[in-house]
Structure formats: C-alpha cells, structure tokens
Image 1 (tube, rainbow, N blue to C red):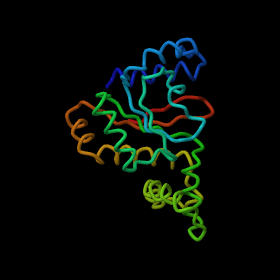
Image 2 (cartoon, helix red, strand yellow):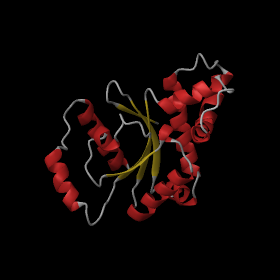
Image 3 (cartoon, one colour):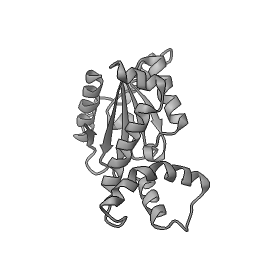
Image 4 (cartoon, rainbow, N blue to C red):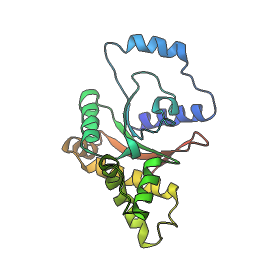
Length: 198
C-alpha cells in the first residue's frame, strides 16, 4: 500500500513539473505487453471531467491503474462493484478517490441546493442527491453563498472515501485486514498537483 501511494505521488510530481516518463513509445510497448493481462497497482475512483485523466495526472502507463470515472467521483452501486472487481481480480492494495478543483458536479449540487425549484434531469439529480449529503453539514456554520467550491470538493471526497470504505464486505474486510487502503485526494487543475488527504 505504501509503495503504491509512493508511486502515485512520484508520478504526479513528474507530471506537475513536466517531466513525465511515459511517452508514446513507452505506451506503445506497454499496449502489446498488456494484451494478455493487467496488474493495476492502484484503483482510482475519479471524476469524469475531461481535464483529469488519471493515467496522465499520475504519470502511469497502460495496465498500471484501474480507473473508474463518474461525475463528482460519487459512490454508487456500479462504482462499488467496479472497485470490488479490481480488488478481487488484481489484489490492488490502494483505492484513491480523486476529486478536482472547479468540479462541475459539485457546482451543480450547490446550484441545485440554492434553487430547489429548478430541478435538472432525473439523472443529473441522482448525482446531486449523492453529493448533497457531503455539503449539508457545512451549512451548520455557513450559508450556501459562503461555502467555497474547494471546501465542498474536499468534503465530497472525504464522504466518498467513508462510503466506499463501508459499502462492501469485500472492501471493508480487506481494509480491516490491512490489505487495502482507501484514501482521498484532490487534483488542482491550475498547478497539476494532487494533494492527498490524511
């Protein structure tokens, strides 16, 4: 687990400083090698945002990461099942819930909370309903207008980590046995840096 987290941090440092080691030549050779099998050392539950491609952000190659992307990096049954699959099939020791700055799903949730009489589509509302419980506790000390988007992103990541850690017997038992670590992180679009949460 510690080695997997270290590899992600080192890869992100390379990416953020423009020193990525994975170029088109290395990826081409990895493509051939990965045809028969994959052995991802980490699972990334990230947002669908087109500006946050996990393999690039962590400077990893084909077959290194098992990536699950959904708007707002929410935890729903299909995401839990995908994590269970990767944990069971590949024994990946690390799950990272990756949020990011300027997240549209977080902003959509804040907007929906400000304007409850303007519902979006039923499918977008399903995402909003999963993000909203992360933001609601913040209203004890602040109004919706005072909540920063960055704080809401962090709250959503932390909530998703807690949900994922307890959403499945497979995940929960591996965490309890020390065979799996679930951590939260946030990618900054401006700097390219990923901050990991303790």
